[in-house]
Image 1 (cartoon, one colour):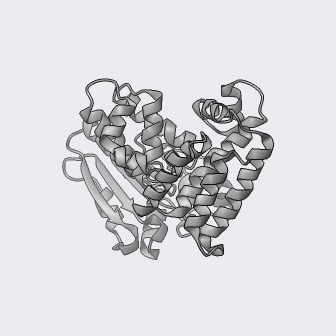
Image 2 (tube, one colour):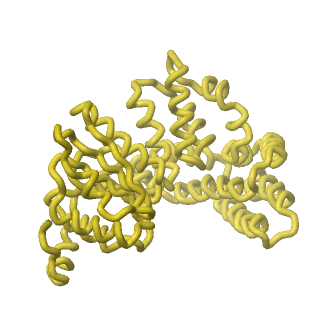
Length: 342
């Protein structure tokens, strides 16, 4: 093994950035750091790497290490070539909880990675193992980083779902895509599963009717459906949807969040000028979100929108413990939004 770098050299090297790739652009490297809090995307990236390596050589050996319950010497043992020198994939989980023994062995291994071995380090965030992360990120000759950050924006989830259908060669109408994203926006794994089911079972173009057929109950009680009805002025429909959602066990907080997402997008777009693409880039939205917000704004005034945002803030506080009756607060919010703040 190569001798450890001096403290000064290590600090200097840590400033050198290794290639940082998206979860869907993973490629083989002796050391692959999979970082970020989005576990679903991290699992998919690691699985994609395994599949890629198996296509290249079906004799690939796959082994798993848990960094928090690591046995000293385990990494070097698994990475060492066997008699027939098959390629080795070593998947290391829980690096953010790693033991001192693993940290020492991993830092030592970085000095001279074994030929034919691919070591994947899964770090889900936190300060534990930072010394190792810095060392990996300094190893530009043989390491890459796959960043798996949370998809927080609606536009990111929309793009993710759109890519699922595109990769499968399956056509889906824009309204159907919006419906499935809205129904499963709270859980990326569920969203991916819903896309996979639609792709598997649909022989023709996927429409809103297809989504309703499969996930009608989920779509009907979805918070965004309630918000859409209220914003369009359909008070009775929105109120029925709200009560159905509450009776089905829906949490009031995500319902308020759905209204907040819609109204804030409307507020951003209302004063914006330029094409949908220009405003989408400016506000971090998808162009279809800008178009939808512009349609939603028909019949609204600046004063009415401001009033609704104020009521929204009051409702948010109420459902998070500041009020005695969160259901009443929700119904008041629906009434105010459906009346466009009048």
